[in-house]
Amino acid sequence: DTAAVYARGAEAVSPELSARVLTEAIQNATSGPFGVYAESGLQSESSDGSRYAASEGLQDAVGDRLAAALEHAHLLTYRPREADGAAHDALLAAGWSIDGIVTLSQLVAFLAFQQRVAAGLRVLSEVAA
Image (cartoon, rainbow, N blue to C red; front, side, top):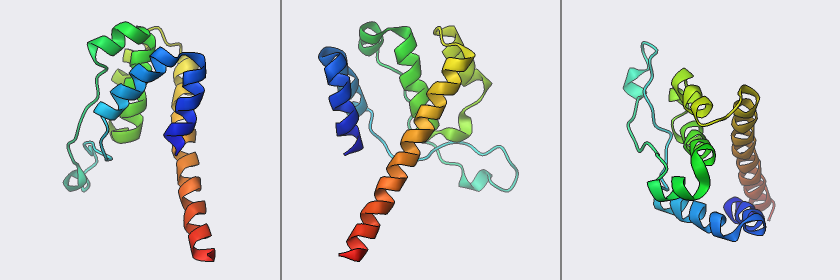
């Protein structure tokens, strides 16, 4: 449901780019989280999973900056333990400012929060019914 809301908004701005990004998202859908724990005592909870890299076609269509943002959003969503200086360097190399990186990361965090609240409200409404 959340994806549909944001897809409609993106379509209003650019139907072609919206369709490209949506197709890429569908082709790379996964579940997680994944990642490697560096902390002692937690390594047994590490799990490997997909690492997203924007396809060449998508990168050509949306540009380096947006492709890097999509890769970062995937990293924060599915591999949050691995969000490190190298991840930020990749965004800087793609033309993101420090403030832009913080804003992007906050938007990803807000969307995750929004989805948890919606899921919780759905459960509460089912219990009440």
